[in-house]
Length: 97
Image (tube, rainbow, N blue to C red):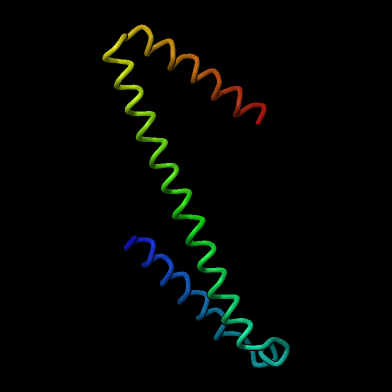
């Protein structure tokens, strides 16, 4: 959560600095309120997307590691067979999408 907030703050400040560097003609064509509102909503959407995907990736990684350890304790042969099949499926997925 702290990293997420820092990332959002850094993203907002970078976008705001890029917005401030624009020429005045840009602000004549676009409303400032609409730009700042869009900046806020876009930053929130990006932050939510990243935090959700990071949470899912972390959870899936922990489940995979736990499953590997459990299979290794249960049967080393079964674990190696499962890893072999997983590797083949992963390669097929990379090739064919």
